Image 1 (cartoon, rainbow, N blue to C red):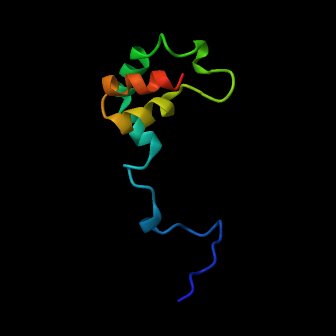
Image 2 (image 1 turned 90 degrees about the vertical axis):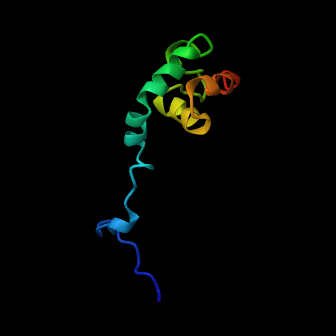
Length: 84
């Protein structure tokens, strides 16, 4: 069976919806405390203004990535420091 061609205005099947475990807004909300803790733990290693002037932006999504990878803020500190 050939799949139907994609149409940008066609409704999206519920089976293709983003689950809450993939929804960035939900992940940010779920891990808010850990993100804030990690940000505080590395504040002396991060450039002023949260941006290195080239490509690295130290925002909530940056910290979320490390929380999801390492589980706890203290476990992620060394890794965040190595990215500065």
